[in-house]
Length: 569
Image (cartoon, rainbow, N blue to C red; front, side):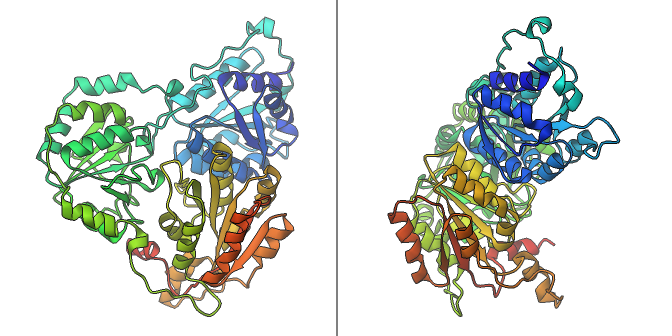
């Protein structure tokens, strides 16, 4: 056995079940070792896609995956996906070969690359320490909720590994084991050992005055609103019980969309994607509580959703979020579920924001589909709202919607419904385009019981084109929707109204349906609502091949969320 093989064995013993990557000479042996010890390996066609697949897989499965890449260019190719994962505090481990000879063409400062995007650089330094260093990297990923770069220097990888001489005949599994790890906080969500709560932090909070202060604020509030983030995805029951006790309305950040689906007091998403009704009611709140939610500029509509007189509370495991974005009047350190249970026992029942009239309005106006619009389909182009509503009606409800970034993204994000908090995978912390297809692949691997839906702009689709082959090779029954306006639409609608030339951000037509068929997918082109019959036919058929929907969408003006975002520029 060599060190590279020992590293793969040790990661499998820690509980890693799935790895994504692109194999080169510098990660060949460690990847084969992962496979030999039972880890499922998903070969991507680009390292950036592999990193984003792993990120999405982690979000949707609650397990820590591995990304395996070649030294130097393999790592640099993966950096955008790694940056997204690091900014989202997604626990995963990037294994990268490392050329230590400064004269090697493959040599770069890999530690500096990781640090620059917020990942944690670590390294296997010798045969005698390899297993312990792997276990420590896994611990950091799990307990500190970090994206870890574990460098594997080429000379160390090739060194002989003698389990007997290292005292490692049977490498111990990590404390996290193979059990799913659970979200605990957003913008610092914690992944708990074996899915258990961080009871020490919960007890710490209970011993102080913060719970009593929160209970007093909730008892005095007449119009409380709860906004739950990714760190609250494990606490729906506790939050609904407390909200019912104090009469709070319920909303989520974008990444936690679907958490309260089915609750009659669910306002859906807060922030840039909020419906007019949600905007009105959140602005009317006299108390806003962020649960595992950083209340960043997007979730608060650049601060415009929180009225000047409203009190703000943040509940989070990471006290660092109290200093970020919206400043709270009260910060409570603790696990969201534990805090909610404790506070529920401390407050008396109150009517709060809930009333028959508010309930009727949420029922009638609470989703974007309820908001009337003028269908602008014409001239061989379909209104993206009409397109998305039509797809929402056709596609099975058990789905995972994975949107890319761009002008179009509000339409699939808000007009396609999701069954719960695991029906929406939103890799947007870095706001890069081109991650949507890889996101959908990672989500599909995590949840094979659901129909994966990738929603892409034409620019992002072309950026991620290589992994169309991955979708076909894996046999994923995916629906890929390309919202094609033949442009980088955000830039067109940002700069166009000011008279700037747009030749750098507009493009000639591309036949995405032909491209898809060339990769082995089925495809339909949609220019009007009647063309969605092709989607229905695919759904009613064998679904042996994935489907790409090439939608030529209207492009006369920017989307509603983009227009609102530009107001802050």
